[in-house]
Amino acid sequence: LIGCAPVTFSSTLCVRYGKGLTDNSSLSLGEDEETDGDGFNPVILSPSSYSRKINHFNQYPVLEFRIVNNRANCPPGKNEIWDAQVTAILKLPKGCETSERRNSLPSDQNSTNKTINCDLILSPSSHPYFCRTWFLRHTLDESSPLLKEEVRRHLKERGPHKGWDSKLNNYQDIRNGLVEFTSIRIMMSGSSALSQGEVYAEKTYTYDDVFIGWKFVAVCFEGDEETNSFRLRRRSKRRSGGSVTDSKTRVDLSLMHDICPQKGANYEPMVADDGAP
Image (tube, rainbow, N blue to C red):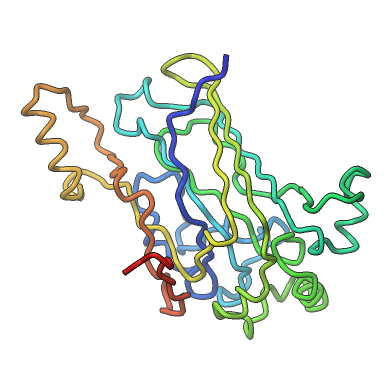
């Protein structure tokens, strides 16, 4: 039997671009990512660009989400998910396929289906020791199925060594360049350290879940940096006789869905729901 993985997916998909890609303040110490000494994060670039550090302003925009381990604050040995793997399936409306995509589709999808399914590359797509938070990203470059055909063609004509067109470094052009996809289905699997069995979880995002020019708020903290909400929960647990672990790195699970504007202040305004007052 496959159990339910004790994880939570972020409720939104953030797109960081331009100066927002040089802002690593959302990655606090203890999160499952590190940058090298000069603040450059190579995972943000497309795979073909890992070997060269192009101008930050010309980096490709990156779509990202995160997964948080709900047992992150439990003692070691009881919270880990081993050999975690994530795959993503992109569902596009029938009219959005390019000739390149159409030729690569199975024969059954080239028929009268109203939607088309294709793989969406995420990085990193595996995590050997998932205990706290896990950021997954997709690069919006010339090979991304999330970009409209004319944008991909333009990027190909520029050449990969030039990266993203700086004239498109604004949320309006990035939004206009995105395909209005039907859904992105995320599937995660791994082995639970607690149950010693296979676990699984999935999340489906839609086009309306994309926020351009926004980033995730940090949820990990060290020692005295704990947030008020976590401090209150810890005190409450002590009063009730519950155990409190001595692990220094903590995760404030109440912040996992929170986002804020990226560096540079060029972010897409949030639109209130129709039913909002």
